[in-house]
Length: 195
Image 1 (cartoon, rainbow, N blue to C red):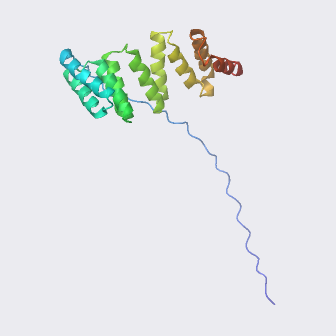
Image 2 (cartoon, rainbow, N blue to C red; image 1 turned 90 degrees about the horizontal axis):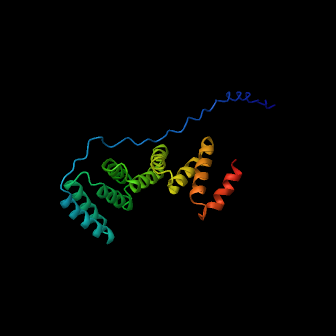
Image 3 (cartoon, one colour; image 1 turned 30 degrees about the vertical axis):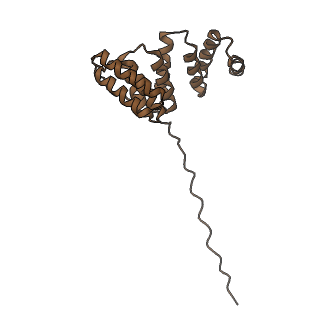
């Protein structure tokens, strides 16, 4: 007679573990420097800058970057040289260097709207959403009629349920400023769906 062996009962399953999903970490970009930018020889800087523009137009990024850096060496307060340098670095897929130079352009000229707008776009692309919002907010505070900045803010705010009301406000402002925009119909539809 073969004795049948019964396996021991399986242990009970462990109690469920409460899974706590941490809040996402918000990326914040620290300022690169707060040291003042010193003026230098704008004439020398402009000569280098013009060479940079020529090289950039020829799509010779390395030569353009070098010329813009020479312009900045000649005059560290030359906002447009930083701005063009940022564009070159962005084109060369070096976003950190591009962000640094947009920031320097704004330190040299805080009212440089094109630099601020492009800085905000790149901040958002690199995941610095709160920093991007702060830049767009500065643009609309300085110029409440800047439709593109209102649209950019609305687009960011619309991505989070907690900021839908802010998105609505920004989209409504955009529609008021650009009622004939090709985006107007879609935005009006979004506003109807998100009352």
